[in-house]
Image (cartoon, rainbow, N blue to C red; front, side):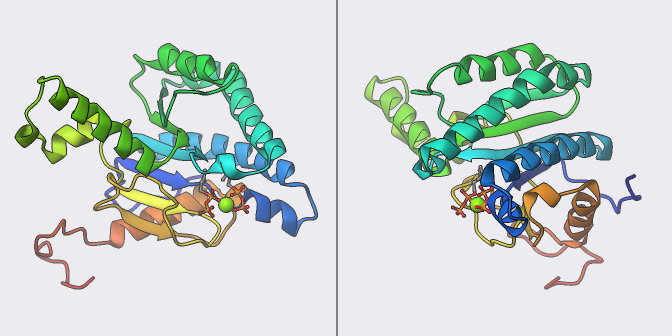
Length: 247
Ligand code: IPE
Ligand code: IPE
Ligand code: MG
């Protein structure tokens, strides 16, 4: 059940889903079990976001640095992502969810890339919630790829360097066409971005919550949205009339 919300509901919420391993560890379970439970929390979060009227939900599923983990854990995480798409794609499509994938698509092994492309392709004309899955994603990698693509255009004489603007850079990022996140939530008590949406987070509100990702619920999402609604976003300008400066 969703409680009535204090407007405005953010257009774009991004979540760093952290703490699967610690959730499992606290229960004497394997990390794999934590990741499995984490997928259930993903399902709930996607539904809740749709119900609450959020337009874009970005989920950090696998970072470009997560390849540093043991091979068995990497296989678990990739396996779960594939299973999620295989099992849930039809239902998400039915619910009018549009899927976008961000992250480096080159050099991915096995059948993961075709599945990701299928998810995007199947849902491309849907008009409901946009679910952005950050897979093999790291901001520095994303920005580097954008810079290389701009440099190539300059090298080939297609672009003059003094025409490069912040908007042009944004349009070369994986998130092209997606508004910047209004709110970034990180679970598990860690207070860092871990290479997530660094460019796009320039004016995002950050909410850190102590619960581990498998324990994430609609009620916790609503709580974070309420915190967001209390914030006074200034974007470098002055406080809105009626809101106290410094809040
Ligand atoms: C988040 O949980 C899932 C991914 C990073 C893919 P973790 O696996 O990071 O869990 P902790 O942080 O070790 O508890
Ligand atoms: C961030 O979590 C990446 C994802 C949630 C996919 P990590 O667990 O990888 O981040 P660090 O290593 O604690 O910074
Ligand atoms: Mg972690």
